[in-house]
Length: 566
Image 1 (cartoon, rainbow, N blue to C red):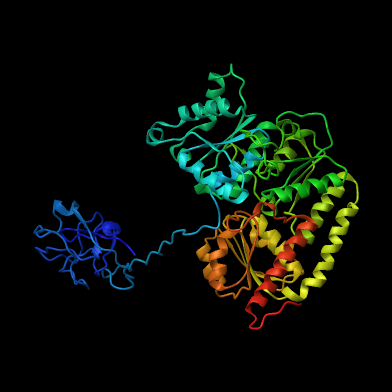
Image 2: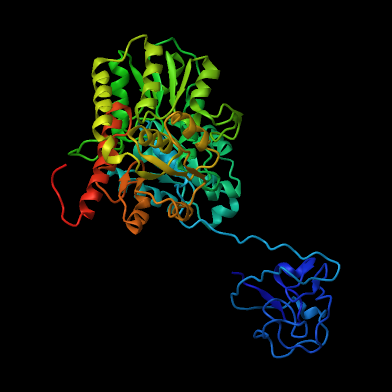
């Protein structure tokens, strides 16, 4: 549908005011001088398609001024009258003789329910995973309020996000003074070890030089005991929450791990965006290999902590700043995420400068640390890849505890295969989560028919082909930059038996009367979503149990007689 504005004297209006064809069959002059086939003198009303009544219009004139000039090209043509919404004409025929008709412009379809969250939200979560850190949004107050509510609904933990609270004045004159005043207020209230500053759409659009403002801040207030300040560029119109997360992690490494230190032998683990339960399990896995580990970022305690008798401005836990500064002494770096591993080297999101695209590559290129890039360890194959990396770094075999977990999962594959074999699934969410889930589903006998992510350039199809090689009978449909409406339109023709993803897919699971197995972020409609285990052999077992039980429950509830024994 289009909203046309019609010139009072019959001129072609709107987009037709430049060279092109009139909808009535004539042609607009180069600068809107009227239809080439002429207009009727004295026409009082213009047609909705932009031509006067005398131009063989196909529909009655729309309402307009009561009087009109005698000349279609008079100066009053600048006065335009809005008319009602109407369907855009196809304009497949007609046009000025000797001139090819203008091709129909494709309809614009807006995003209605994006399969992603905003970029700075991911950065705020990454900064929350640093000990003593305060996430700080350089933008309007509404951004911080929205993100706090969204995070709290999933994690059920308090989440303070500071803001420079820009208004109309700052949008015109710049937000530097507000940024500096906001950091001073944060220092006074929280006494933070680090302030993680992320930009928003507003400050990126007006062109605020955040790096310059922070240099000025350090010069102006250098006599104070300043916290570390890390900044990252995260306009929401340039990516998803995963781009914000990855850019913030890269910024932490790039701006804090500066000096070469003595080797300490710890494993630097960059796990990606996983749950607190996942982080605790990964820590146990590495330490069971007999090695200390630095996990960056570590949300396991800040966003899943115990109940306290007294209020504390900042929660305990997170990656210590000293460990980040000493990452150059690590024995090796393990970075999780297949789509992240395919990110090309180029302009980074941390400070706008060119350089390595990921935190792991920064450490590898700056200090020569061995880098093991693996997928998110969901399912048997991807967990095996992580274990192989740990065996190479530590020189030790898989500990007995995890060997038994692997064996129990393999046994469960045999036991549960008959319930889910041949079922069809739609999977959506963050790219690396989707890749891991498709790998697991394929291992347990479920055929993924559609895999979708809100991220663009995630190399989703290539990664899915790699993790399912030799197992998947046919590649699923793959959508990047997905909107849930697009996912729904595609999935309805694929007859899925279940959905796997976050809470945003519940509407479609209910509409299609199929189970939704919740995984990832956000999970707003269930309790304990942040304690779901996805990674490792134990995580694969937990996910398989939930998937199999969801299928069994659907079959049981659809049975006309019911049963209580399998």
